Length: 317
Image (cartoon, rainbow, N blue to C red):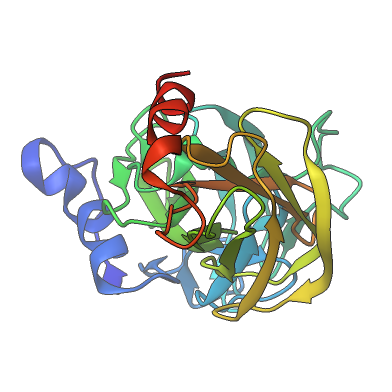
């Protein structure tokens, strides 16, 4: 996109280039063009924004939930362009916070600054980047505080947006006349969200010494592999007892497990609860639980009519 002007625009025209930039491309590269003033050896005046995430300009960036996304932001004046002044660079993050990389920078013909890495770059206590949080997903990231910039991201599920913005002036002719320049890039970070689920069923036993058999399924329902899963079982609120371990559970994969127990109250309802715990690649803990109720059945061969009454009392207990 090219944007030519020799004076500061007003109204809607003022915001058109930055409003259109994120809609046309995730990696815009705009230049302000004009004839070179006296004393400038270039043929045009111009300024451009550069934005890299995890070392790549590609907009197809993915990151685990909780991961830190490293970014580089910079500005450059082309070899055939003239000096740019009052250059401001800003990173705006999904939580609404921002970091001013430059506020009043001057770049000469053919000069570039990339931060971090350039001695002129300010230090950042949190690093040049952002740690993705669950609350960021689907939110809109907006930059409206930088001079001449109004830039926003779409609302997209499972996506966090980082915005890089630039504003400045370029000499547009002999004398003091200057042209205002602004641009922005909205970077979508597709967030990989871990997930874990489980289901549980049981088969009733027969008689006072019969065993209740339970069967469960643990499923990786998220976007990332899970590691070191432990499946434990509890009956009627008792302690959880380890059933099995699962070393790796890849995305979309399910594992079946099961066991049996003899209930202490044969004909009463028995609640069987399974707990599955595991970790994602960043060490975050995930859990899933499922419960089912079973009880042993009575049969004529095991229970005579004379014994029905005690059994009824046992059921009320």
